[in-house]
Image 1 (cartoon, helix red, strand yellow):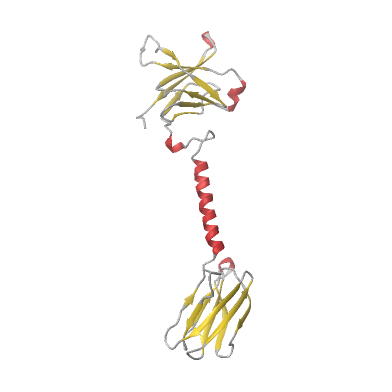
Image 2: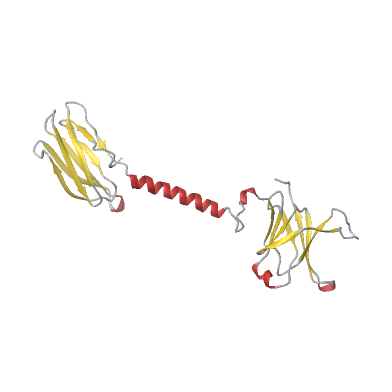
Length: 227
């Protein structure tokens, strides 16, 4: 981790130790405490934003110790150089605190986006809701969606419906047939913005607007198994 300590890079004669910097970072200056017995040269790997500067370090003898300062466009590296007869590090890289912070910020942004994508405007999570409702009828105020959270039923209308006469809601019984209509039952509900909030889980219901021959009707029926 850059900045956590002054790292030691162990090299050996006849071997090259490489210090790889952060992609896109450019070296401005390199200074070594012992520039005679340590051969230090920069090189570049890759191109564009992925270009990596590599500082090659090569001691002329074992038992040497000095320091190295690498000034870049982003930071100052301070490294201790140690040479042994047989031990050496082929490539040294750093991790950076800002990269770790950026990774956490990206993770949190992804979590926030996922939460936003799965949350309705009323704050309810889509994964916990039952959308198995069929809505039949052709009127201008036909609900956009009907869903339940296992306790209540929610009927969401187009925003344009709010400027007209709101339809009334009745629950439908499981009776009725070819020559008779199902029993209509009054249910408790309230209006929250563009949504009817019904104080029960509906199986069958109807929305009615107008009277007589001009009456408009939407039917709602639950389909499939309950969650």
